[in-house]
Length: 255
Image (cartoon, rainbow, N blue to C red):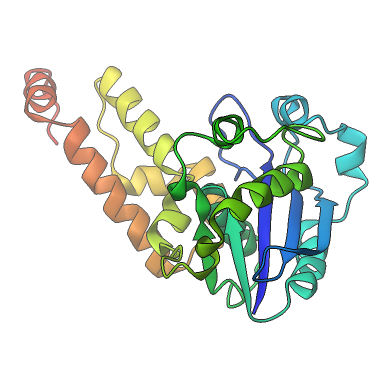
């Protein structure tokens, strides 16, 4: 089985957006069981949705570089070949795995090849930079560069090679993957409705233009829309508690 230490950079932003936080760079280090580096992979990824200045500043990537890069479908195809089958992916934290699964879903790409994903951060305390400092490992290259950060994570992996054989593998949660990008909107819309002394129903929420856009972007199945409805109704009960219901009733508004 091929072993890879990976790091991903994202099209992050300061404020909520209906669009997924797409991968804009993939970096990976292929190693053997002794931790020796066999090969490396680096590629920028052209996102489908608007590029955020915050992400460009954070990662130090030029807008023109991303605009000229291959889309996710092309890059991930090359990356899968690089990984080989089967493969073990090791990353600092679970975030990379979650967004890799989300981007595969939004691009209609099978995730059958993502069978073993290990979060190495649980072996250490704090973030990647803190772990490097505590173990007197000097930062090299550029911070928030996917390949450089993968190389940094690899140096920490060398201190605990038993991580490679960990039986704890990240498991995809279909509910989180399909609803993770809509939770904030649910909360915002429900709270706004309460503020305006209105009742927002599931039927109204699901027909909202942005909600429909999210469903299309995420390619949600009827079952996954059902997950979303269940989450909405749970939030609804929390937001429209006893006090809110009493206030609305006094205004002649029934729930």
